Amino acid sequence: MFKIATVYESGLFRNDGNPLFVSSYLTRVQYYCDAIHQRKLNEWTLRGFTNPKKPDDFRAEATAKWFLATYDPEGLQCKHLRPYGDLKPYGEFNLWIDVDWGEDALTGVLPYKPIEIPHPILRWNSDTHIQMLGNDSYPYRLEKSRKADYVFCAQKRGAEWMKRDGIENPIWLPHAVEPLAYPRMNYATKKYDVCFVGHINSGNRIDALDRLFREFPNFYYGQRLFESAASIYGQSKIVFNISMTDDLNMRVFEGMATGSMLLTNWIPTIEEFFQDGVHLVLYRNEEEMIEKAKYYIEHDEEREKIAAAGCDEVLKNHTIACRVNKMLETVMEKKLVTA
Image (tube, rainbow, N blue to C red):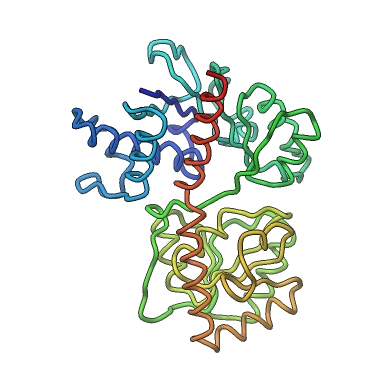
């Protein structure tokens, strides 16, 4: 039995994003490993499902079958732990997963200092690109990565920087969508022309949203999570995105997964995954942003064709299941080579 611990704070602040998605997915994989073996089911694994009374996740089931057949016939177990106190009573683990939960931004707010976790450690970094308000997030993440045995970065530039700075074999592992949290929405009619769900935390985002507000009165803006955000996306003709710098952010994948067309700024890495005018629509300046928004608001058939193709591509290749499988494959293959 391969035992995994995911470590992040989940009780004091927001419990969302990659730490939650990775942990929940692994508990669902455990559920199917136990079910396949006809072991007594651990009730807490059901919490990873949207409907615990009717668990259903074909991706987690496929991962369980693959892991059982390829790496460990007993399957895997996953336990989520918060990073304080004595972890020894929880037992031994074969892997400790440290998914970036932004604790460096919580200095002075957390009522404790996060403890060091044992080895082997898998670290998935986010926000290596953020350098604003005097807060450069990269040095903290580099130091955390120096302590890890497996290093992944959600930003390609972050992986390149870490390799430059001596991290062995950092892997670019972009963000993704958790389809159970952001389900595909099929609304017969669209309520909004354009929507933006998120925070206004960069100058370029302020300027772009101000322009969109003025050009498109039927515009939704707000902060939502999970199914609530997916509902807004699904009711919008266009899901708008603008990256703070050159990051392929989570909104790209989450917006596309809900079945509405994504209009987003061009960034250097996005065309490594998606084709402009086929899966999504890209713009390079504000004038082009407005021009393309107007065009696709008025051309329903073209817009919905792009939306459907983008949704299919994301759900096939850019889910949390895809990212977790890459993590497991990387760790288990290295174990086989070094055994």
